[in-house]
Length: 291
Image 1: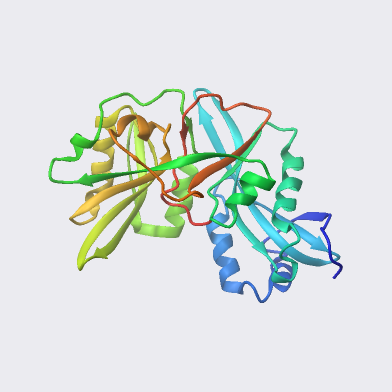
Image 2 (image 1 turned 135 degrees about the horizontal axis):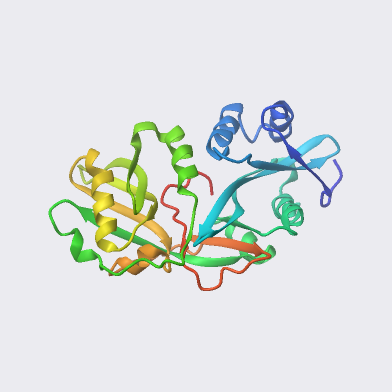
């Protein structure tokens, strides 16, 4: 194994190349951990793209790019979420991760697309520094459910019609496969909300959380109606939690949000052959499983 950067990249198949991938990444990842990554990153509608950096025949690292259709008004583009990074410890410090991303940028660079993600604290400086991705700070919102006080937290203001929406139909299918009955969902002819129900104890009291995964709604009143229906199956006391960019439709209907105190809690992105402009991004990271 020679030192220095690798220049050979290839798309691998997580089924037929499974043994080769595990051999290259052992002992840093177990077969069970790899299978869990695959389960969480295989898109229901499009094929996820796994790009490997290769040293001879040995796989040194892989990055998964989950295809994801974003849409606004009557337009839509196929984008990719960076949703899983694995590098062999034998190759760390050699730029495997950023080099794979740069290779994939060349692959999609002539198309109209975007790469985005939710970086952890280790990946954040690589995305925003070495790779030059833009970062939008995330905000957090909480909403008590039940007791009649939720309307005090919301405005009736209409959500922006120009927002760029994630493909929630695909995400609901993916998350239902992962969470089963814990996936909560409500919709009507004008919108929807979905998320995951969780229970946790705080000072001995069990609280029930509705972690928002995605939403589309007309205004604050409509949003609350959908949330109340989706969260009707979880116990009391209960509340909604949501994390997304401040300019999202949620930011327009909540009276108050709180900027994340973590530097890396952002949405990172780079566009190719199109411009987001000032359109709000309706991308939420309350139910992210990788990154």
